[in-house]
Length: 248
Image (tube, rainbow, N blue to C red; front, side):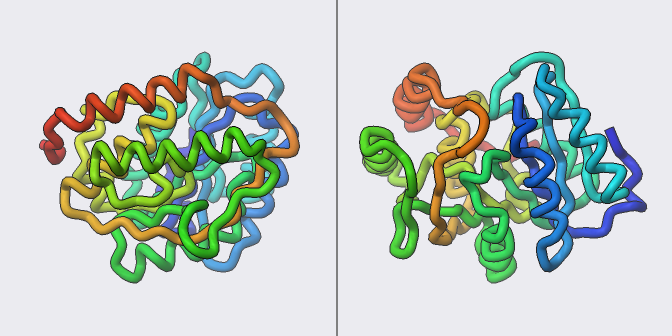
């Protein structure tokens, strides 16, 4: 893991959890490194047996100081990967911290628009499929409906006021993650995405939705499961009756 803060060239860090993403990781790193405005990348790899981490290390040689790798042993869950990434980013004083998938379902070009929304005053900028201008490509209709009505359910229970409450393409201002008590975040799948937004809003931060086009992955295997969906359904009810406290 790279830890030399003197080599940082950006105020923005893109956290990308990976497990078996060898088909996507090199293209993703090259794409993010080529964006206007410098974005550093932290890959949180859960022991991918396909050599994903080796390809990240090759990327570190091409882009010294801008690509970082945090390796973990085994699949520990999406939420815990992001929490580890958030802590890493906060220790290194990044001003803008992103969540993004590695499979190109999130368009890296939209990182610039998400950052701009936070620069304009939002605490959290959400890449949204379900606001005007947003859409989903290449998803089965059943999955689209499940996702869409999940957000309706979340708003009915939590009054979150976010059209795409399960979205995982986001930018946080540093102070949001510093204020949320990361030790109290419980969930690891879709519920994690909801819980982070809910905490941010309850702690007084504004959430902005930026329309994006979400495209289903072309390479690799989806990590979605019915267990993850069930966690979100039940987790929302637990959130409703749990007090949100700022970090101590």
